[in-house]
Image (cartoon, rainbow over all chains, first blue to last red; front, side, top):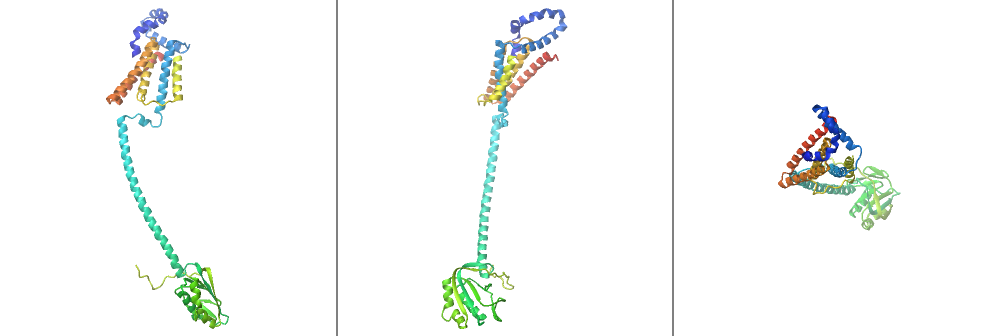
Length: 279
Length: 110
């Protein structure tokens, strides 16, 4: 609008030399043509201004201003198209509201996180307890398995070998030996590949002896896990197992060992009648 | 021609350099750009009308920019910055459209 406001003075000052050649043609064509005349000249002026580049003071100043405009335009467009343009253009009140909402949300999420962490701690504790109980159960199962003969066992102990070439050794003598070993603290016993447990029975069977229904023949080899320094004297006491057997013409050898492996197993059987009375 | 060259150079330089807008002038730059655009369209129309004057153009260009920035500044101080900015943009937009219509009549005679 400012350009239009100044028209009277500028027209007189600037356009007068250019309008002079056009002036004689204008009036001769009549009033009807005068509306067309400026349109034509406007176009020509544009072309004239554009093509022969004239280095004048006016052109340079305008170029400088337009340079500034172009620069500002590009900078603004570039800064506006950066990622957070949604917040960049927002007013202060909107920003405050957004900030409040974010604070509320943060608080809610913080509470939720706290609750979830508590839950996690609880679960970890309970799973720790379950793990501990499971571990203890496994441990107990192993201990009981050694007694029940369902798992192999190893440890220090003795081997007791009875060579009975005359066939004079009977089941009760072997039972005496087993009782003596048990009394001396034997924890796992096997004889010729048969595990001896609480319910083991021995019977005479022809030349040899039957242990839990498995017939075994001499030499009878006992593998016993227990304290060797207790087991060996228990067998060798005067009037004890070894002397009794030797009286029957059997040869008895007792050897201590640091590592005895009792690997004969028994199937775990569920008792038919007896039930645990502890709740 | 040189003026058009200046505009093109300005855009290219702005895109290439891409400087961060200082926080002080950040709210005023968009309005200033729109005001300058208005001055440029006015100048172009004046040129087509054959009444262009560089002095008038310079003064109108600079005063447009300064007044637009001033209005935004005042609006921010009064707490109606958003509304006043919108108003300035609307007014300048209307002026740009009317100038563009005049230019169109000159160039296309329609």
